[in-house]
Image (cartoon, rainbow, N blue to C red):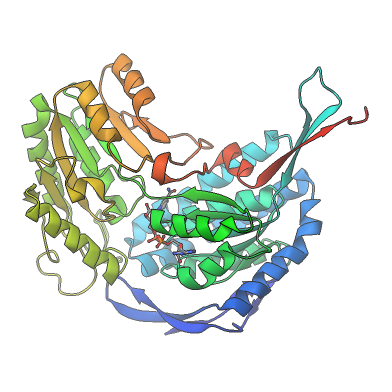
Length: 479
Ligand code: NAD
């Protein structure tokens, strides 16, 4: 059993002041393998005080100093990225190879996105060339509380910690209690890279404890949160008394609209994308809408794809999906699969219970429902497991209406060979991101949602702006 009952505060590893113990469970065995501490109010106050004390000095650091620091962190991070992949694999159950490549190594694009943004970003500038006496100052907001989820733990941490520090804020990171060990390794990386004491602090804790304490803390100026929409609401309420800046990256229920003229692998690719990371992605295309003339064939293709997916342990080699993260998530997914069956969706692959031959671990059968209707629970709730809901549509307008008929608005997907249609639909979709014909977003593009998928935009210049306050000075003396 690993003993990880420590926090990283003010440049050193410290024992908790008020913590309670919590076991970290391996999702593929259901067995505990490490113990962490969940901090209490005294720990929160200590970490926030350290960040507050470091702020006056870090706030005045130059852009060149911040670029140098981000580069150093990036270097150490890349050197230790396989180690990071192994830690993430154990705590969230992602297959080892996938964890090293997708979970750990792809965070590198966020580093480069922020470095590029920093190079060009003007923290101080005239309002316009013809207004030399109007000066715009983009200044760090102050102490940032960064609260992250477990599903892509390192991407979420890099997407918050790096822009917070790059913009001149100091930070207290509270990672998910489900994925605390990767965050502790990240703190080691920060230490090795020479981050000044107090500029970055790490505190483990749960939502009602450290999460709530940070969200309402008088000395926290901005909360950047990624996680469920329910927790986002609670954090917004907790921050209201002190009018905190609150940035929210919340859940999703993405639609993948497949037209008859879509490329031939659109359906299998859509299924695989939905089931990647065992379906635990905020931007998973979990509703597949297929044009009527291609629908029957699409259901057969989705069934075959799902049935060909193997489910297995983290150390197994080859393409497969791992377990979901914990018992609560496993139970929630089972309840939602049962609701799909009860509400009359047609189960074409997978279903209730663990995959055949697996007795232990939070493994879920890759599941496909056909003939869904927009009112069904499985079409409205973020399932966060390998479960796909399919339905047919007749017209472009109908497809858009179904896609937009959700409280969420994170990412939608369009597959068509018709460029005019792709553009029309993209303009009509109420989501922060649209992906046409499997073209991924480039480094530095903003990631974030509309409606109840959140208010924030992460990555590149938009990610820096989340941590900046814009000030206007008039009467600025000429140089
Ligand atoms: P969660 O909301 O349960 O927890 C996320 C984090 O918030 C954890 O650190 C948790 O301890 C903390 N937390 C929970 N309740 C809190 C409270 N009342 N006050 C303060 N902190 C609190 O979410 P999760 O299960 O860890 O992650 C899955 C969710 O995250 C899904 O809904 C997914 O869509 C969402 N997500 C969104 C994005 C995005 O960029 N939009 C990315 C990844 C995950």
